Length: 65
Image 1 (cartoon, helix red, strand yellow):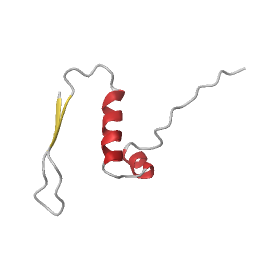
Image 2: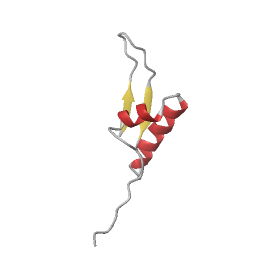
Image 3: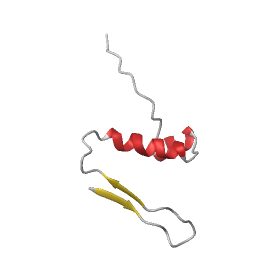
C-alpha cells in the first residue's frame, strides 16, 4: 500500500509525501517514522500526541492479584 499526501491548492501548502508500506511488517514502524518526522520538523510532544490521539508513552500492564 502507498499513502500519498498531495499538495493542497487552497490556503495551506503541504509537501507531497509518499509512504510505501510494501515491505513494512511491523505496523508501529509507520507510527515511529511519522513521529520522528514531526519531531525533526520542530513539533512538540503535545502536538505529536494530538496527532496520534493521545499519549505515545509505552503502557505497562500489571497483573491482577
